Image (cartoon, rainbow, N blue to C red; front, side):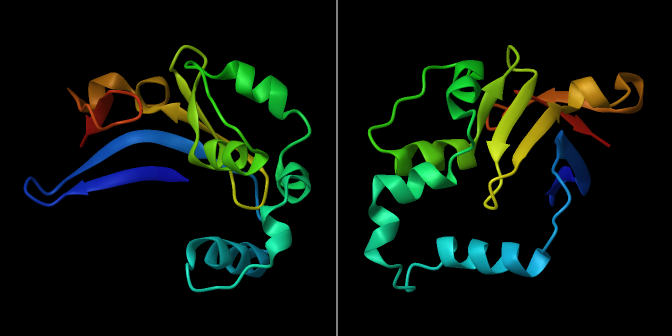
Length: 137
């Protein structure tokens, strides 16, 4: 999936990075799970607050994944850790971004500088970007 940002003022497309996600085996299951996590009015059973429930949602190699993190990640519960992984964080000296899809699959994003030919784009620093530099075209 190509992550794009449309700048309305300049009518340009800004590319922050290119995200690689695994193919979904069941798009319907993904949409339903995503809606449950996003919808505040849904009454999720109390079992979802248990540490065992959230441990089950973590990838088996989550300890190794956290070691990839550029910064120090802190959490008190496995639920907090799960949401850190879903939000994502920089890895590989900030050249990549790791996140966990809502279905538990691992996603990697390359910064635009790593994936695009530099001569074909205009580059600009943007502090709100995950990688700091964005390609405009």
